[in-house]
Structures are given as structure tokens and as C-alpha cells.
Amino acid sequence: MQAVNNVSFILFALVVFTGADMHGQGFLGKRPEMYAAFIRSELTGVLGEALGDGHGVSKEHLSYIKSALLPIFESLPKNGRGRVSEPIMKYTIRRYFSATHAWIVKGFEEHPGVEDASNSAGNILQSRVPGFVRSTLEQRFQQEGFALDDMVSMIAVVESLAFNELVRGVEASFHLNSYDTGARLSHVDVHQVMASYMIIEILGEATTDKEQHTQDKKEIHESYPNWHETEEFMADIIASDAFGRHSLLNPFVAKTSTFEDTVRMAGRISEEFGPWSSYECHDMKAVLSNKDVHETGRVKLTDFYKASFDGAWHFTEPAEHLRQLGALDESSSHLGPQVIIPNYINGLSNCITSAPYFSICCLNECDQIHEHIEGEIVSSNGTVSQILQALETSPAFPDASDQMISKLKEIAVINGGSIPIHGRLFAQWLHFALPRDCPYPHAAGSITPKSLGQWRDEFGEELESVTKEEIVEHFAQPHAKREPSPDAGQGMWNLHEALMEVSTPSDEQDATWARALRLGSQLAIVAAFGSVLVREGMKTFSSSSGKAKQYTI
Image 1 (cartoon, rainbow, N blue to C red):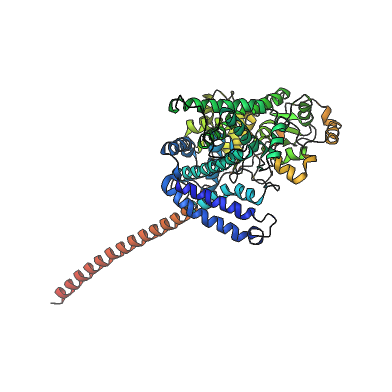
Image 2 (image 1 turned 90 degrees about the vertical axis):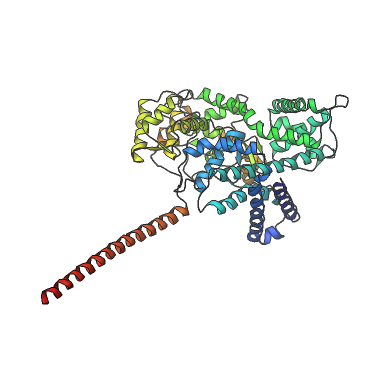
């Protein structure tokens, strides 16, 4: 725990240090390369301590992380030493946080975006910390690759950093409600503090202004219409925590909560809010699916905007924002732009909270399909028959059509007879097989996803939502009058494969040693053979010399 506390202290000191000069005139503004080097140096030392003593995380939790990672780790492609490369490590950790907490951790995104320009220097620093953790550990393990325990350590460190940030959030919530952190809170007081904590998380804007925060509390229903349901969720967490402590409390003393109790509740909220709030994602998906009459996983852009007219508070992103999110299919000029349902649902614009280290977003339903396949095949590659057999045992997967089986065989041919189950083409196949559940996999660098906050920072609040003029323009296009088509999306199918790099520098090193050993063995064999020839030659020479002497006599 001491190492984690050291991390907190260093990060806090850095935030205070940078916050002292917000206009780029201090250390951060003048020498960013020294600033980055300083952070890296400090984190290197702290992580060394953290990795050495288990980061203050319980053995039970480390075992939980390991058991959660093991099935996917066993199915991943590995280098010559049985470890995974840096890109595969990022993919694995991204999958872990998404599946367990519905988190997108900053620094591990599939398609890295931009930072919030409105954030203070301190908040920008905080958002970069997971990336520094990742890169620091990458430098440590990139030579030989990452073993399972290495990734467990990285996850534990990131979770510890997130917990420390949570503590600061609870401290801020105490302050905003004029409570001292040493105070004992009543049941009502705890609700007020937890409400403040969640409002800060949802708005993504930490403030010390009590008047502004009071105004935010009054207007939270406008910013987040599902606030009432969120209050009920928090009430359940608070009641559950109180029930768990019931046997430990003095029955003759009024039931109160300490700062530590409140932090514990906030921790549960942070971990459970993402999976709990998935009902919002399901509601959005249901609205769009009702308009997807041919089950292509797509709705016309005009129908997408019509959904917002029907009272839904989503579905207002401008076309350009949807395009950058990777949620817009423009492969057919005849059909016009189509919104790709799973890409939109899983897009950054639908993230509910945005903490410094992570955002809570919609769960990727396709991960469950991948987990099932990994558990059945337990390999990084599978044949067509193996994959189809694995999918037959998945209740979430429909019977594959002849067309989809043909496409699967096509992918196998491209990859030499087997199918990399973590490759782009298989992800594309899953999208067309389950078009409402599995996102379409865009090529790296082809999209630049932005959250609502990032979009607002770049284009301003007035362009945060689609304008009436833009909607009128879309409805005036000829394709707007055409009916949805069962062929929507077919133009996006392509045979561009993309596989994560498997090898690490150690593979070349091992290959060099192997070549040297083979050469050494060959030379040794040649030398031994030469020695035999020399010995035999000497024997023959001695024998010949003896006979010659005999003959002379």
C-alpha cells in the first residue's frame, strides 16, 4: 500500500506544481520534454516498488484479475517465449476493463483521440497518467514480451491509480457540501455527498465553487435525464453498505458513516455503475433496432434524427461527429449515409462519465462472443469448422447462412487455411453475422473518435448537437425518400486483413542465438569429423610407413 500512496503523493505534487502556472509560463509550458521525463522517472521508481510488493492490492483481487485474464491470454498469439507483444497487451487490457467495469482507460484506447482542451494542466496530466504507466511498463517488458503476471500487475496499478483519484473525488464532494473529512455523516448527508460525487463524474468537470455546484445539482436532470434512476442506484449501494456494516455497529449509537465508509461506497459505484447503467445502452439500441427493418445493423441518418424528434434525448450528434466516431456508413451514394448501430452505441459520445483516468461507456456485447470462441478453441487460430462448431454452442449466435460460411472460408484462404480469431477480418465477419451487436472494425488511423466534451472543446457548444439547418439539408436529399434496403452495409465488406504484431525483439535475439548455436554445432561436427579424418589418416600413414620399412629389409 505504501507504494500506491507514493504514486498518489507524486501525482498530487505534480498536479499542484503544474496548477500553479496555468498559462504555459512555468515548467510545463517551457520544457515539456523535461516535464515528461520527470514524470517517467518518478513513475519508474514508484512502479518498481509497486510491482515488488503487489501494489497494496489484496492477493484475492490479484487472483481475480488473473482468472479473468487467463482464458483470453491462453488464446492469444505469443512470441517465442510464450509472451505477448505490446499491441496484444493493450488489446487484452482494453478487453478486461471493458468487460469488468465498462471502462475505457485513457492511454489504452483502440483509436486514441484528443485531450480535452478545456481541462486544466493538472487534469491533462492526470489523463496522461495511465499512458505513462503503460509506456513505463512497456519499456520494462517490451524486449521479451508480457507474461500473464505482467499484465495482472499493470491492471492492478491502473486500478490503484483510479482508486486514488476516487479518494480525491470524495474529498472534493465533502468540501462542496461543507463537511470536514473527519466528520461522521448521517444517512441523508451520505446521499448528498454521493450525489455530488456522481454529478462531478457525469459532468466531467471538477469544481471547488460551491455555488456553481449547487446550480449543477439543480440542473443535472437537464444534463442527464436518467438522474432519477442513478439516485436509486446510489441509494441501493448506500443501503447495501450499511447492511454489511450492521453487525459491526453499536446498536446504541446513531448510525453514521465516516470518510472511509464513503470512499468504499464510491468505489463500488465506480466499479458497478457501468454494468448497471447498461440499460441505457440497451434502450438506445432498441430504439435504433426498431428502425432497422432488414436487420443490417444500420439505420438511415434521417431515421436516426427522427428518433430524437420522438422524445429520445440521444441521437443528436452532427454527421461529422458520427463520421469521426466511425459510426457512419457512407459506402453507398444511392442509399445515403447510414448510422452503424453497434459503432454508435459503443462510441465515445455515449460514455456516461469521464473521470481523469477512464470513461464509463457502453459494454461491447461482441466481447461475449469473442470470450465464448476463445474458451472453445483455446488457440489464436481456428479452422472454419472449429469456429462454426464453437458458435453453434453460443445461444447469442444465430445459425450462419451459406453466404456467411462462404465469407468465412474466404478469410481462411487469405490466412493460409486458418482464421486468426483476433484479426480484423474475423471481427468484420462477426459484424456482418451479428450486425447489431458487433462493431464494424475500422482500419487503424481511419477514424478519430471524440467524446462529447472533446467535440465541444473543438467546435463549441453551439455545434455540440446537429443544427436544424443540417437536418433540413439531409431530409432534402434524394436518398432520404428511399426505403431502407437489405443491402445496406454490403459495400463496407473488404478483404483487408490486419493482425496485431506478435513478435518482440527477444525473438530476433533468440533467433540470432539459435543461428549461432546451429553454426557452432555445425563447426563442432566438422571439427570432430576433421579430427577423425586426421586420426585415421595418421593411422594409415603409420601403417604404410611400417610396411615400407619391412619391404626394404
